[in-house]
Image (cartoon, rainbow, N blue to C red; front, side, top):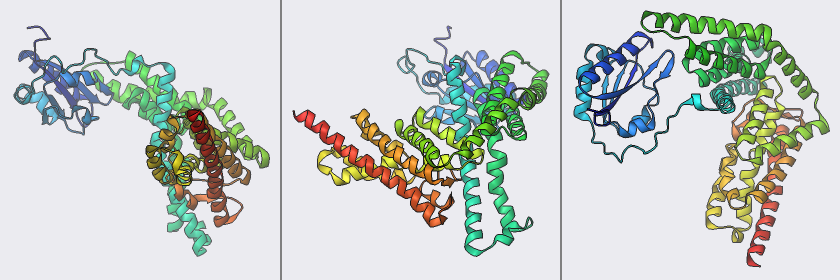
Length: 477
């Protein structure tokens, strides 16, 4: 019987340690399926990450899936709607034939039309170097955002309590609850952020084997004061190194455990640590220190120019690559202790959303019903710091609409930069008012930060209305 005529099932194995039982169960299922005349593809989710990954095309033509596992299956949503046999990993070793029999009994009927004509495998090895780096950086940033927000808000809460109740002496006592609690926030921002960034950038490139060397590389980046840039570099070094080691250093049987638990983490971490401490890290540390000194030296007109640039980038593509580049720069500056760039970014994020709502409210007669529905909601998204809500508004006439957003955003960014207001909590939206710092007091800082967004939105609103009237006039002519 040809493989095209055989029943086709899937298997996923995962054990607690991620070594022996994971692969023994996989081998057991393969052997049992072969003896039963069934074609099977088994994905292993072990210590070395996901291997022999099951694609969407595999799921489309499969009749059932066997989960032989002791830990949660990653990406289990892929198998939604597919009949499942769920068992411990040991069952894949001791009674794989029963699991295969159960899968066939539960299996659905699959016709030739269910499988796609072209099988597209999701193989990250086919991605370009640039795409790998981009995905790695964005993955690392996505994992540090919750840590930064939590740490920043805890630190801000402690600062507010200290100032509101005059607890400066208590906050200075290293044994007090207030000092210890605030240290959690400062530790998240100062100690954890760079290693987490590095580790999950490496994880994006090499799966689980990248985590250990990634964390070690992040600690090395902290040790030489290379900051956010050092964390990014160590993440890339660890990720590509472990990616290479997985491809060129592997073993089966008893040696798999040695390679997985000794060669990968020990040698990988040692190599990444040495490169960061003595070779690649020091030049990045010098560059990082230069950037810190440059940013700290900005004031007045120069800071306003920086703010205008960040403002333009933030609203240029409303959450796209240029916006993400501005975000990465601002988070990097925050990691190095300069809180002004992210404060600019957070204020500017409200401009496009506010202007859409204001334009629709002031001139309902010149906007479509769909645009008015969007406008009714975008101001709320703006308060949450979400720029993407304005994208549908810009799609019909992108150049003038985006231009209107940028004009207002440049002004907003310049105001915040000129006033030298800082923000220690990324992504907090309107709650950023609790974590502002500057020379104008809590109320003054808040008025400037939020007022700058309102001024920028007013400029963008006027331009949005003007460009829409011009567009309608052209259509009428």
